[in-house]
Amino acid sequence: ELEITNTQYGALQSSVSAVNTVLPILGGLFIDAFGTNSGSLIATSLIMVGNLIISLSTHMQSFSTMVVGRILYGLGSGSITVVQETILGSWFKGKGLAITIAIQITTSRIASFLSMGTAIPIANRFGFYGAAFWANFVVCALSFGINLVYIGSMRRIHRNTPQHLLDRLRTKHKFNPRLVLFLFGVYWMIIVESFTLGGGWNSFLHINSELIKLRFGVNDAVAAWSASVSQIMPIFLVPFLGWFFDLYGLRTDMLVFSTSAFTFSMLLLGFSKVNPLVGLVVFSISLALGPLAEITAISLILPSSSLGTGLGIYKSAMNTGSTIVDIVVGVLQDRGSRLLEESAHSYDYVMAFFVAWGALSTIAAGMIFLIDRFKWHSLLRSNASDRKEAYHMAKSKINRPMLYATASNWRDYVAPWNFVPLIVLGCMLVISWILFAMKLA
Image (tube, rainbow, N blue to C red):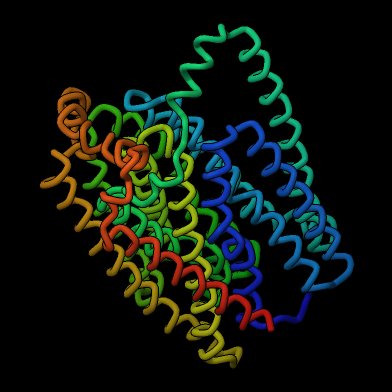
């Protein structure tokens, strides 16, 4: 309808992840400093307004207007997940953490599954592709209303809470921005994993429907419903995994398995004749295992005072990877054959890239496993009975960043290598924005 190339489509998709390369970090800092109520209100407002502009752009037939709407939507969507996970990570530290985050992830996946499966039928029902975007706007407006109810409820709770308890909570959650300089090596390896595996997940979800259509020769409706299978396993598996992680641990084991499943699914979908549903189910297993393992691991090793910032950096790295991979995939696809009878082969380079990207993420997951095993007393791998002992043994290490950051001589504790992760992340942010700007031009 908009007569755009695959590269431009990649830029359109990456417009959401591009703005969220920086915003989750700023949002996390904002949440740690000012609380979740203000952050959630701003985020849901941006999501609603962004989707309104996207819906209007379908009537205007304007690619640039749609990009503006996607950017506003991205400004809100990245922050709202940080808000949600910060709330859960603060309320459910340790016991019950995994199952509560699992419920949050499952709800998100159900919404994604339904949106992917109903977009084409809604468009066909009304005879206009923009109808699906208007349906999405209605859902976002409903979310904004629910958020207002949540904020009102929290304010009533605060009014009924004794002042001395509120003061204790504020002291516990007091944030110091210098904490970022003293975050742990295992945390930064999880950020690397978020960049690689998270970027691969998001980018593949953007193109899986067209991949199924072209490579396996099915119509749009069948391709859309087949692609939605990639969201099925998280719906059913994540709640069980939440209970499993709380009881048995094994987060690092499941992270290695998640990266391996991603790589194997790309091999099946790109270079085999196996029914695509098999590869999509394997991919969805990876999508179920990885996020829950990563988010709960971060919530275990970071103090509550820096949890919003830590999760913001995690989201930022994921979206930076997604932005870069989206555009690389668009370029690789445009270099493939454009002949109709050979269009299925336009994804050969793309799938080869995804296989290599998955292998890189598997190496990162293996390093996280080893660091946890030998440096963190297997805290991330320990079960419910051993976790208290492992946490007690690692407690001094967990509290060290706050002690260093608040010390009057904090500069004495800063080593040159403390800046390396921040410099690397900054370079990746710059690269993602350069690529995004080049493809919009």
